[in-house]
Length: 220
Image 1: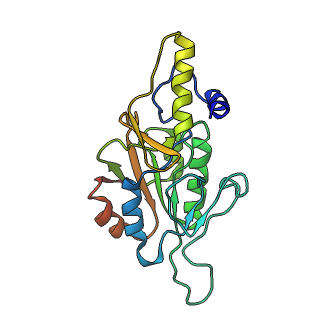
Image 2: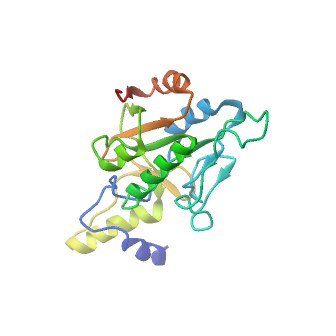
Image 3: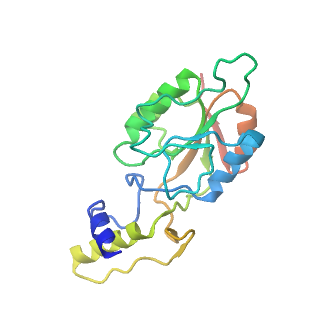
């Protein structure tokens, strides 16, 4: 673990202790995934385009970078053009939240305009340019800050970097393992989240996700 910890230290400025929306290394916890699975119903979730080898997302297809680059590939649409094919192909999208987020948002916008149906878990940043570029017209403002998951080695690396910078002990906050490698701390995220929907089943989205936050629509 020491070698891994030293490598991960380089990912995190010592001035930043808690992960923020600028941090790329989030994994989705079960709480926002449960309504996603409910929405997908018997067909199940079709694709996680920004998959993690350590994540909890249960999808028929999980793309892992660099083998599958979600920014370069087209995402599935509700039917493949075969007569009689009405299988929904829902993608759950939680892109990296760091510097790549604007590029990811541009790809989300491009794919939803192609007709891809998706649920996207994003920072609730409605005033940003990248949010506007997606063409969002329906979303759920999550009722509380989500306690995202991260690798234990990354958590320890951040606090080790802080201690090295300050010259003072800086133990990590209390945390517990969700899996062998993923942990969650009591700190939670430093930003609000939104579940954004693109697709034709707006009523179903509203019925399910209104239990988790306020539903907002863009005026036309």
